[in-house]
Length: 152
Image (cartoon, rainbow, N blue to C red):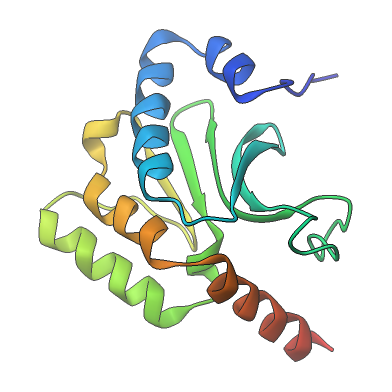
């Protein structure tokens, strides 16, 4: 059975040096740009940035015991993943993010909302930082509520 780390510091301490350095660099960018109201925590075995129950008591629709995840970052077998859930439900924001990334000339290795990388230099950190600065808790909750309404 896999044990979930108790804190972000525990998570970082458990990583190999190269992955710790990559994740710490991205984490610094995220924390410098993260809008007020989001909370850093451990969720799904990764570092997560979420809307806490104190702001949104309903929690995550898939598991209401969990806060609403906004972004998660974790060490995988062959890469580091940066899950940007706000891009998954927002085509205009996704288009903006991809265009900003393209301006840097760096290759974007991305699924629907998961950016994969091996080292921080692989990332367009400016675009990542801008994304976290661009989306407020209220904006994200509006997306979440719209999604919940459309599913009913």
